Amino acid sequence: MIDIKSLYYDELEELILGGGFPKFRAKQVFQWLSKGALSFKDMKNLPKNLAEFLEGSCYISVANIEKKLVSRYDKTVKYLFRLNDGEFIETVVMSYRHGYSICVSTQVGCKMGCTFCATGKSGFSRSLTASEILAQIEAAGRDLKVRISNIVLMGMGEPLDNFDNVIRFLKLVSSPEGLNIGMRHITLSTCGIVPKIYELAEYKFALTLSVSLHAPDNKTRSETMPVNKRYPIEQLIKACRDYFDITGRRVSFEYAMIDGINDSDECAEKLGKLLSGLNCHVNLIPVNSVKGSDYKKSRVERQKQFVNILSNYHITATVRRTLGSDINASCGQLKRNHTEEGGK
Ligand code: SAH
Ligand code: SF4
Image (tube, rainbow, N blue to C red; front, side):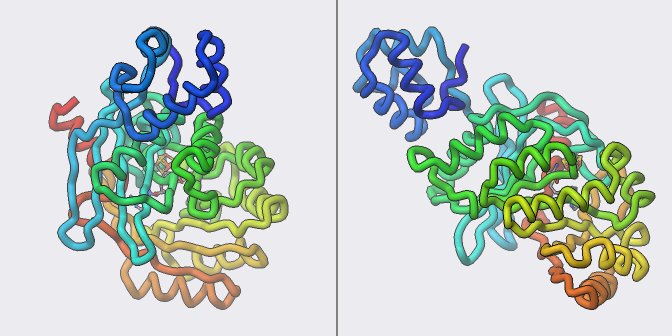
């Protein structure tokens, strides 16, 4: 069966023409799909034989709301969506002064096994198709009745471990016929799969690449992020420098501050040296504690000290505020709880 919502517009036209139907029908089908039609029979202006043709050869990806949590503090909304095959994924919508931002999942689970991450702890099931990544945005937008203007690929999964589907998603979501969300409003977060960073650079998208660094040296990084054993820190930072040279886009770094693990003055000095001369921004995030690990957030005084030391190296760093802390808004936690409660 063809995953119809993962097709580019010209591929949809080809499909319709190939079935012996006129080209203009593609536009009608596309409009129905964009409006969120869940079955071909509901597409009222299509001839019966076209609806039957589509029914027999295609399926429509959905993200059904299984659970929805709304934060009392800041209106952050977290969804647990159920996909066509019964798998669950998480999506978070945050409201800012400038609009709505959505954090989407790219895989069911993750293979990378970072020790501080709830998703990493619950194993890997499968990658999402482009349409399943899109479906999260459509379903949330429909439910909240808002236009979502920013996307971060920071939910469950490693986007660069699902490269082709993520590229397809990026092209679809930014196309004028689609949701038309420009690349400048998209951030892709990766744990640092070096060859894929080079592949992504070749597309010269105007998106923001965000690299989950979380440690300033190989020893500390390999202990928390197994991917570092394959692509050590020097290779990763070189790739980031090259990414900037190729795309002209400033890279962001994520650094989850863990009490006593990666938050000493020495770590900040090492990080300053590592990134010096690189046009970048560092987001410091007090680590969220997850079940099964005893990592604790760094103290506020440590966070401030990090910002100060980095500024000596002319690196701008900000401490990210935590949204949705009452609803476990950091990804992977809701699904884990749901599964452990026997919800799956
Ligand atoms: N796999 C990608 C994107 C998904 S994870 C990546 O690792 O970048 C999104 C972000 O959340 C990453 O920066 C990740 O390191 C961070 N993260 C995961 N668990 C966290 C936790 N417990 N506290 C703070 N940040 C966390
Ligand atoms: Fe995967 Fe990212 Fe979690 Fe690491 S932090 S396990 S790469 S989702």
